[in-house]
Image 1 (tube, rainbow, N blue to C red):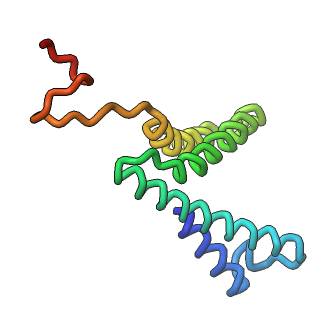
Image 2 (cartoon, rainbow, N blue to C red; image 1 turned 30 degrees about the horizontal axis):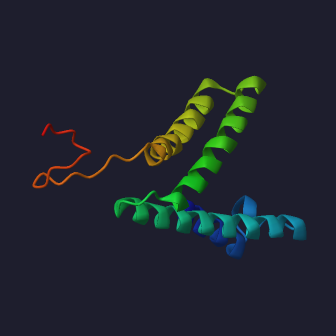
Length: 128
C-alpha cells in the first residue's frame, strides 16, 4: 500500500492534477518529495521484514514501520476522537491501527523452539 501511495503521489505531482499537483510552494513540494521517499523506504522495510519473518527470523525491518504507524495512529485517533470527528471516521482509523498492530504483536511474541519429532530434546520435557 505504501508503494501505491508513493506512485499515486508521483503521478499527481508530475501531471499537475489533484491536490498534490496544485501545490505551488517549494516547501510543499519538498514535503511531497519527502513523503514519497518515506513511503518507498517504508514499503521496502516492510517487504524485507516480511521476507525475514517468512524465513523464521524476527523481522525487525517490519517491526519499525509498523510500530511508527501504530504510535502515530494512536496519537492521531485520540486527537480525532477528542475533536468530535464522526464515528465512522474513528472506526476506519481504529481498523487501520489494528491492521498494523496485529502483525506487530505477532512479530514481537516470543518464539518457541522448533523440536524435531525424531530426536528427543530437553526442551520437550521427556522423562528418562
